[in-house]
Image (tube, rainbow, N blue to C red):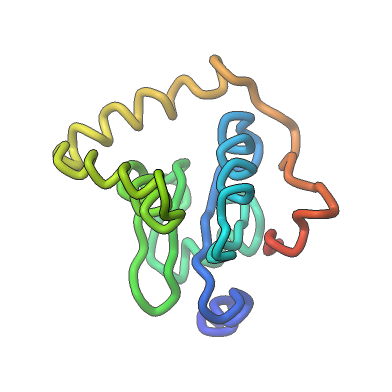
Length: 143
């Protein structure tokens, strides 16, 4: 079953799992889609069946994760601040400068990440369902 789940990710693409009901996350995904000039990423919400299957495949307990996850099939996965930095690196251009933040210890970066994550619904709001349903973006979403 696990490999059939991975086979749903187009070859050569990286998968970003995100909180589909978070307004901040929705905005971040739209931003990445707009700046993904090399068309490297595909997306799935953590709440989707597919997102849950991918988490299980890579061995992440879905009850203990509510942050962004970047999965590079058959290579690696990243979450929290490491995922955000890796995504920025893959976007290239000015975003490559985000690599400078790698000098910050991961534990410290994750404390900041967790603080924002803990308050994201309060600060930015929460939706009932995933808001990425734009017809022009659907090919990027794996449901």
